Image (cartoon, rainbow, N blue to C red):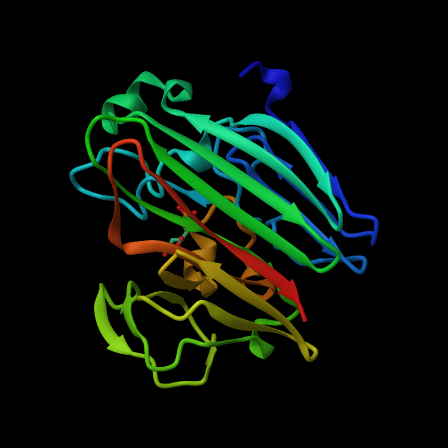
Amino acid sequence: MPAHEANKVVTLEHPSGATAKISLFGATVISWIVKDTERLFVSKKAILDGTKAIRGGIPLVFPIFGTKSHIPLPQHGFARNSYWDYLGILTDNDEVAVRFALKDNQLTKEQRQSWPHSFRLVYTVTLTANTLKTILTVKNEDSDTLEFNTLLHTYFRVKDIANVSVEGLNSYTFTDKVTGGTTDVENRDKVTIAGEVDRVYQDVKDHLIVNVGDQEKLTIDKTTMKDTVVWNPWIEKAKGMGDFDDNEYHEMICVEVGSVAKWVRLESGQTWTGGQTISIV
Ligand code: BG6
């Protein structure tokens, strides 16, 4: 990718006034504005020159979640750190959509050595008056079975984390990364944040509600994605992150749908599709 392409951003504009911006770097959605209000959080310290995954918006995690001792890829894989191909905008009735693609031959030699598989990803971002849909298609172009994890690492902008909660997780088992990977079962209807939170809720239902404060709600409807991660770094972790301001933990919550607790297995020649629709209620 030539240097001048590094900051290339595609803008979607809906007749209602809603807009979305997507960087070719990682096919990362970096802005979603509805009714003149930005709904996604991007850190003021985010690095946007293509040298690091973007701290905010919707980074796309693929093919690993976190790190895996037997796969020498960086945390959360290569999709969020790769330049995707722009496939063009489609306008159809009430929606405007854009598609991006990433193939194994666009990876660095080192990345291909770490994850030696032939694949094609297509990522479609669709905007309507009050929804944002992000759908990933994975095609296994290898002769062997492919195993991967994927996750839409959505950072929501909130006014004050003290007034934020997530509904739809009650009774689901979660792995708690803050306590070193212990498991427990959620017993709250509304999951609130009052400290560092880093939980992988497993096999949860497809409809979630994020109360972002001031009586405002977003809903997330996921398809095929099985799990949901809730993350807020809180004070100490925030201080340790160079691309995140010390106080920004007040202004964001990550609610991330994905298939991460178990590998997704995809047979040779097969295609897998999963994603989310986020709606302003
Ligand atoms: C979350 C993980 O999905 O991403 C956390 O559960 C991690 O453990 C967070 O800290 C941010 O990761 P990164 O690589 O973007 O700093």
